[in-house]
Image 1 (cartoon, rainbow, N blue to C red):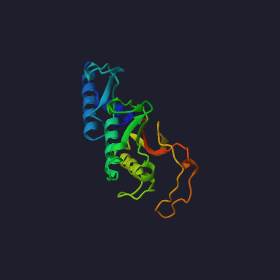
Image 2 (image 1 turned 90 degrees about the vertical axis):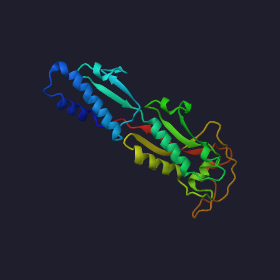
Image 3 (image 1 turned 60 degrees about the horizontal axis):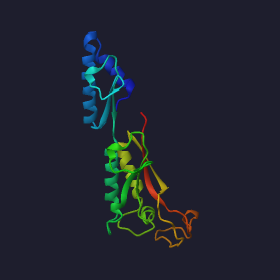
Image 4 (image 1 turned 30 degrees about the vertical axis):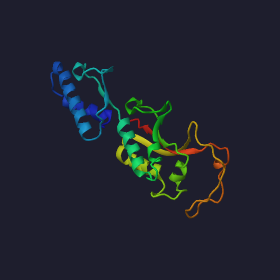
Length: 217
């Protein structure tokens, strides 16, 4: 999406030489045209909030020059649905339980309606199966290579990197699995030979997660 300074310069050129009484009409037409172009080129979402002179939901034609007319795009649904689908497609088949256990959460809890996610929220994609960590780091033999969450991160950044920041991390989950302290050496070369301090008996397991936040433009 064009930065505000670029948009303002284009607007100044678009309204140059226009009679003052017609500037509002031209400003509204210009804003609608730029919105349509942004959506068509993939730089804008079809879900957005419109502010005209600071009034939420007001029509472009009610603008009092010089405005502004501001569109705040809502990208969360596209981003979250893409991340979830990528995680599912990247997951091993077997029983299908792991595939079905991906979910989205925010600081307020598990999210079902992605349109309700606030634009400034931190969004987390994770999987709550007790063996999720083993699958992601490659401690179990699977039909897919390890690094599922990292691959989802790369895919999200490749498609939505202009709008969102994506980071892989490990998080605890409410009611998460409590480790029993049993050790079994992984099958890959250079696998560790003993338990780490965060995998001792009684420790709460941490789960691989993708943490998403919107960029501030």
